Image 1 (tube, rainbow, N blue to C red):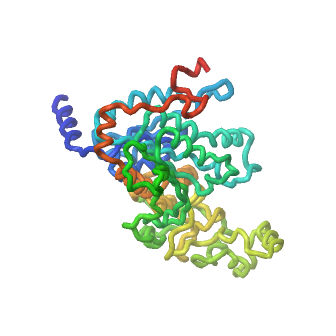
Image 2: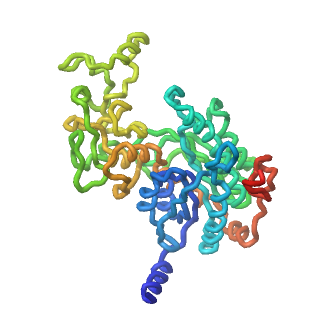
Image 3: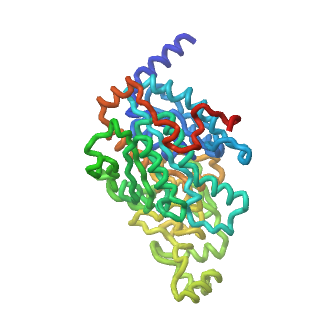
Length: 445
């Protein structure tokens, strides 16, 4: 027993000091966490209320610094518990982080703290409300406040850096100005912030995926060259990784063994293709890489265009829904990988190889999202839950780039000085009257 303990201590002592320590809010299956670890960070914990992601998150995200431990999966609902919403666990989560964050700050005193806050994007997408139940509609409405709730944790723990990623349209005023409000909340807390819409294909990720990025660094320690303006309020947000090249679909997934529809590979986890109905097999058999689905009008079996599409096309005199039942272009990055990426009826998700009449597999989708090939999604014998995790994930390579950029944006001497002399955090009034962490509990509200 003593030898094992000594060995474990010696092993931990040989691990490097992290470039930063981090907490990943809304971690899901761990795309952001994997990016943070790849950038040289140590992820204390990922937080999510969906336990379906827990196994995938923990088994794939082992830290390479401090103690070499798995990133913890903390199952909490970030909202406060109220009379109308009894599932809230904000106070419990705060108590847990109060134990963890100071402990790891002490273990790595020269490592700044980063909060990754990549809230679920569903409230900011264009899914028709007719498809949502009353309960889901209420959940979507509540989830629009996730960024505001996360800002309360920023105010309490005063991390040196904040990173947030979301859908391209989150800045649209039709969503209530939540992105702008999030940024203003960080401004009030003493952070310099910057935001930009970027395309993942410019970061070496084999996918066209427009995303909104927000970065923030405490004003007392940010490097002056990181400012985009003379007033010192707006941070420069890189729009590309200058050290990367554009990667095509064929370059990314062309090495994987071919499959037939309904087949799975015996040794490659998640390399499993969805079964096709006979009519959809006939449709995709006639599809050429990169082309629209206009081909379906002239197939050997006749016009196999969906009736609903035919009516819309005739009414608008245009080729609508042109990406469904089509194949990816082999020499370009893929279209946006969604939660339905395993289905040819939900987008341009047909494999580019005309000899493979099938949709891409979750393994291929994960690679197009920039997950490493040894990242296994559980349960491995199912398609839908795995595709959902992959489509909802932040591309690890994107998170890695911006985390590394943030870590290089801090004046190290000022950070060390600030760490030794505790920086005073803003008062409760900085974020308005709904502040939960100073002198009040869930029961006293």
